[in-house]
Image (cartoon, rainbow, N blue to C red):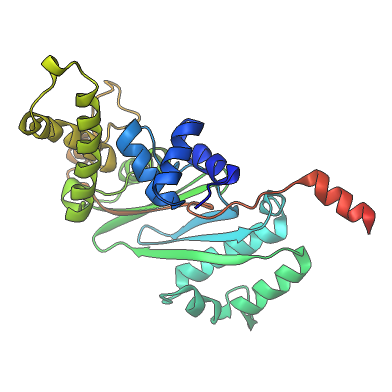
Length: 315
């Protein structure tokens, strides 16, 4: 199939790879964007990734909590970033977060069918429909999550006024201000470094196998670029992968990440929590976290304001 300039541009923005590399990858994968990204990773190395930080839609994510035991996070999307600063929209998103906090709903549709927490005379969906009419943009409740601490506490953190919202649940026997601060610090870590798992044991085998395949392809490509007398045998390359995999998985796992406030620049998150727990006479470990980044994984609307203005003038 013919590869368009728009496809090449999109892949380049997603990965940072060169124009020709992007075109070759798209050509080889018949325009499949995800497959092209994997192809670029094999050729160009691990620096070629989907940029999770790229904002693909507008709106807000908000996290709220009720005491130490219950927290909820929601994401509500709009068409433009102007709406995200609209007070009516912000009040609605906060209301949806409060709705999720007291709800037992498992899906967005179930949540939307409930009586609106701020006005029981209507449903959440009816309030959403009314607000859509007022703001004149398509609005949608994309997702929500509710976390109830089983043995310990929850803490929330909101970054960038609603760009990223996080809930962290921690197990502990003692709850005090120092424990709360430590767990909130970890929530800030989750927002900043976006781990995928709490600990290495949580990484699925298929993810391990996939990453090994990618790193092996990179290593083979690097090996082939060496002079023939310096190339390593396949079995040596595979042994070298163990170190690379362990390093990559440390970045994936919250417990193994270097704590962002570590004074020595080496202390891991798990070591930080162990130290705080010891000081307060309690084991302190992370059970789970939830991280919502507004618009992640969604298509971003492309706008040409010059064309938009001209179309309005013509009418």
